[in-house]
Length: 404
Image (cartoon, rainbow, N blue to C red; front, side, top):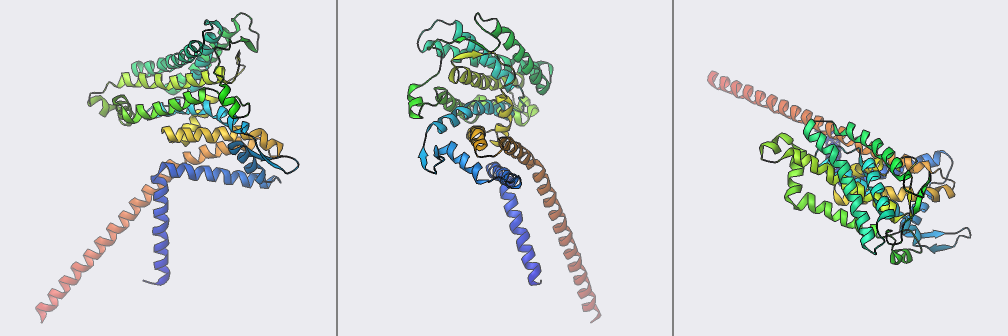
């Protein structure tokens, strides 16, 4: 074998190992596509004649609070960190909603509707419940969770009982939730086309400690609720019998059914729990960010963004939380990028590219499987040829020996 052929085989083997390592690890794939998304965005910014460093400076300002003013003096303002977390909280919760359904073999397009159901319930309780300290906001949060769970559970019931596609059903339920929200909220006494009357101070999730810690940001108690939701997701999916049965249902419903698992009940429960996470997201926005109820003019899109968050996070608790922080960072960095003459739409391009690249993972895996099959076929053909050659040599030697 020549030296060039040996180098080529070594390079092919090395590239194959690298490709196998990346496609075999979902975490590495996610990290790679995020890096690729930023790389393409950097090239786009350079093409339009802007300085890509401004994008990274804006991101640094969001995640660290460190920035420089027009006099080129560096300073620290933790408010940016607080606002980053505020933007990330509903994304993480809606991402958990989508991820929970995915792990059970469902596709929850309806997190937006479940978010609106939770937001509406939280606003109603915030306006009408007696202003009892602590109990008021606790009841509002629980009401939002229950409303989201109910909205998701309806879809789960129809999916389990009548085999109605959860994709179609959840899309329709999004619009039903939106228009019901407007009808109900506009009938609250004192409401106008934009907002409701102010909530009592006992209803809001404002945290003076977190606000002072982050220099007056809107960071609130929903931070702790989100952390609890991430831990709860991890515990349910990885440490409980319910989680095992849900994952088994997601992997193979027929096998789960013959294994004694109540598949219909699991489908309904999965969609209800997924809706509960989205409902909590509605409470975190309505009670944590605002002091009054809103009359939505359109979708907030947290539920739809949660689909991308779950995809990037590989539907795991930690991965979804990190993906939510990433997308929240990009949303928080939009106005800062605009101040640096970088189009704010560049963040939407980055998020879109990340989703597209991560969707290509299945295609890459198919390519690897094809390469492995081809390699196995060539190896088998080579071994067969070598065996035939050895047989012919043996027969030839035997005939030569007889002639002698």
